[in-house]
Length: 219
Length: 317
Image 1 (tube, each protein chain N blue to C red):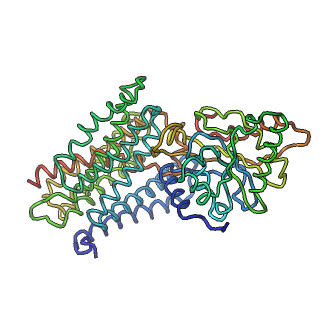
Image 2: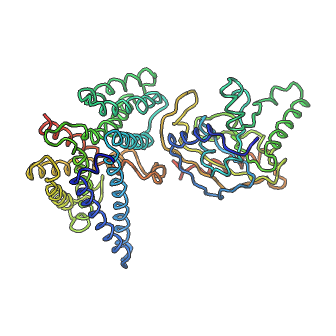
Image 3: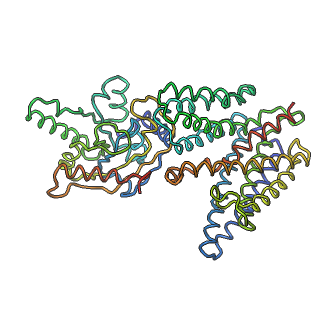
């Protein structure tokens, strides 16, 4: 795998910026090449590309999305985009729920976390949408557990919350073509798993860290 | 070499605009560097923001004139795109409007500019007032969501009218066939832009200097009748003085400038009212870093179509 950005990726990022006119605010941290997991709310297919395009190019070259295997392996075009253009880390959604036994679920869960930890390697950052699926944009849904387990597995990696606004109007769930509108992206202060903090507690705090970055209609 | 460089008069007009801008810029800088109480300082900051906006508009006009007909159409199409992107962000559209919006951005807008460029006057004049007027509500009805149906149709139609239809009449000036004026149409575009922007900035200055009686304080708290009158008179005077660059006599030039000033003021007022109505304060943050394109072109939106039609009716038989 080389370090460069795929030309199609750069092109799509430019188109996404033009359509979304995204304004980026680094409210809680500065852009950095250090390893991070960016986790954000999810309302649109554009979320990843907009977040990714907002990163400076040297960071972008080392940042990979975590995406749903079922969706991105469905057609050859999607497969190509995921594997070659964005170097996505594909994970199976709901794999643990599908498992027949408790043991099997634990095993699947652990191997998912191992996959993601391996994708981080020693230089990559990841983009993760812990809600697992796209919401309506009104509120941030409950986070799935992957973020917690990955954070425990790789405590050296910074967890950066991010909030994307108005993208659900640009390309809502169920629509194929985007409509140009302005949008906002806010990066918050990195969080970490505290000592003795349980899974639910941490996930709720992480969710709060994301939704508190909302700029429109808050306050 | 673009044709514009061979038009000495046009180059003189460019020169005049630059001189006017530099005078304003220097004045703004002098005022800024003097000591002022807080209240005065915010006025001066606003003034300097306006001068910056004006530089941007100048660059847009210079670019579109230097790039020739096609270039001007592309520049104005991009402005229409940015203005409508901003407008649609601000007005509360619903999920059911998605496809209508898609068509508005990617079919109706390019088509309008194509028709202007192809000099299909009969078609571009009815494109949005008639065809889009029928298309928009039909398309929303097909989407099946009837809540606030009328409001939503009108909002999209209004956006298309202001951001696309009206603005497209500015580059359309370049395509008029005016007897005895062939090859000089770029001067008309610059004339429109110059008088319109002069009116903006002079009204602002006169408001500050002699303003007493508010026009519509709810809509635009700083606009006064004195500033309006003095601004229109002084900008009309400047426009009249440019008659030598146009196909107009001095008296006709005065009439044209006066129309541009009145309509420019109307445009600014209407866009201010619109922003109050949709509660810009919530979305102001979205617009902030984008330069507020609508604020830059609001006065041009109303002035451009009427100026175009006046010129076409009286000077391009």
